[in-house]
Each structure stands twice: as C-alpha cells, then as structure tokens.
Image: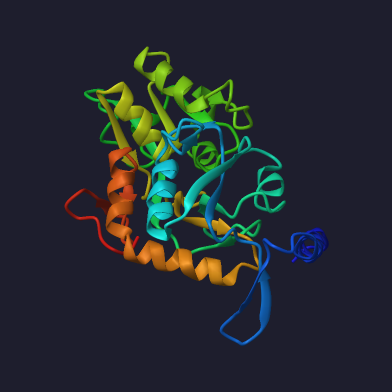
Length: 293
C-alpha cells in the first residue's frame, strides 16, 4: 500500500470513530464472527442509497435506472423505507456520500476498488463494441480485428479500451469523448450513439451497461462484448455493491440478499440491455441466466 493509501485509510478509520461517537442513536453496536465489538453506522429502518442524480442506465432522481430498481427490490426484501443521497458520480463521490455516513450502500462498484469494501459481485460484464446492423462490423469481437483499421471508432478518453485501441493502431482515426463530465448536463454515451446512428462514426466502444442500454434505445444497433482481447488490459469486470470498511454485518446481509435474489437481479439487468457474462465469458440471456454471476 502506498503512503497516500495508508494515510487515506487512517483518515477513514478516524472518521468512523468520530462519527460513531457523535451519532449515538444511529451507531449500532454489533458483534462480528470473531466476537469483536464494532460500530456499524447503518440505518436500521431506511435503506439509504448513495446515487448519481442523472446517470442512466444506472440511476437518476426519477428512479428510472437499474440501480434504482435493484434498490427498490432490496428495500422491499429488507422491509425498509428507501431513501437516496444524490451526488454526481465523479471525483469526491465516495467521500461525500458513503464516506461521510450520509448513506449506507453504493449499488454498483467494480470488484477490487479499494475506495470501498465490496460485496460479492452480482453481475459480470465487459466493455462492448457497438455497430450498425448490416455494417459488417457487428461481427467484430475484438479491437485487434483488421476490419477496424481506418474506421472512425468512438472511445471515451481515459477508459481501459483506449489502451487496447492504441496498441491496435486505431487511435489515429478515433473520435474521443470526455470521461470527466457533469452528468447533469452531459452524456458521452448518448453523444457517441447519436453520432453512430447519424453516420459520423463507424462504431463505438462503451462500458457494457451503457452500450446495451443506449443501443436498445436507438434500435438497429448491435452490441458485442469485448472478451477476446489478447493485448492491453482485460475488459471484463465483476460488479458488486460498495459499503464502508467497518460494516461487516451489513456486507454479509447484502451478500445474502444477492444470493437469494440473483434471478430477479438478472432479470432487471437484462431488461435494461446489460450484456451479462458467465465465468467463461459466454453471454447470459433470459433463459440461461444463472444464480451466480
């Protein structure tokens, strides 16, 4: 762990201690499996979700995203009231929401990110290539495919597949879209799909849930998960939920909910066009979705 990482973790631990002293009625003393007493600042009556106010297909203030639907499902199973703390999912999101104890769970977080403690994953997906049906590019399943040479391919700058595209020699003709945006006013995924349908680009590379959602909205677009890359970073990720490091019992409760409701979770995700993958990188459809992501 870097010095900065240790310092951040120390500050986070200190903030938990201070908050547990200051929020007496909210802090819940619980005993973990090892018999140690710990404080978990999880609201016992309200499912408090940390969420982006305008970031479809994930979430918005109107409750239209798949993370909103998952939150509704979990609130019902927990028999809790559902409430949100909204903040743009950019720099400072974790610190201003989960880290400041204003909410208790982030509904979607990549496995392995050390900003939060992750639950078990509830879906597995990848970046995907989006192309027009009948273009000949809908059969392309890797960025190394020579059929992409000389094509104008949209890419969100700074995302992992940009490295794969650079290695494949595609960046010279690529059209970049900004990564760091205020989702209240801009939408790089929508802009990319609009350019694709208008013929301004030949194909686009997007994070799978965005690719599936916006392609479904546009119609006549084909989404291919990029699971065959042999150079550059792998583009497949497991997604779970994020909780505070101290909230071990809460994490176990969420893991149990995921396990018991995987079928309903899969249905919500598939309804939004999310390209689900099994552990062998095979696509999961409505009939083949398994209990384990």
